[in-house]
Amino acid sequence: MKRSFPHVQKLEASMGLVFMNGFACKDPTLVTADDFFYSGLNKRGNTSNPVGSKVTLLNADKIPGLNTFGISMARVDFIPGGLNPPHTHPRATEILTVIQGKLFAGFVTVNPDNKFYSKVLKRGDVFVFPQGLIHFQINIGRRNAAAIVGLSSQNPGVNTIANAMFGARPEIPSFVLAKGFQTEEDIIRLMQSKF
Ligand code: MN
Image (tube, rainbow, N blue to C red; front, side, top):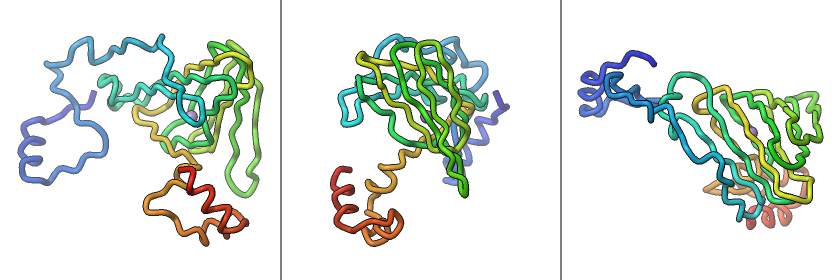
């Protein structure tokens, strides 16, 4: 972990001068084994939501000992038909392994090619989603599915495309999205009503 100067940070914070991107380092003399520990990834996430999937992310927020080390992980659970919807990680490449069930997964490259790379993945199969690219996984099996992923940042970030486009607050004006998606404003308003 990086050296920190808690007394200086405290002073500056009390003066309202510190704006941190990320987490301050803990005083090394106060670090315990629990800072590098998490228990419970054997449990399924709660998939009772419109997309039928749940990401349980273990980033530096959940495991303080990940701070500054450039890695995190997650468990992703899916009901049959459940989708981890198209999203990006602005700060991480992702590597996924299926531990249960069957997934269809893919990502799309950037302009101008927008090439779609996809695979059907069964238990034990591994697939990589390069940093910043839109990707998804959907359970195409008849039973629940689950995957474990590694991410190359302690704070990968996530941007879910549909939420960002149709669920923005305040709303992106429908005429902008209608033009952008080359469709009618009625359709855009319908989409916005779902978020
Ligand atoms: Mn992802």
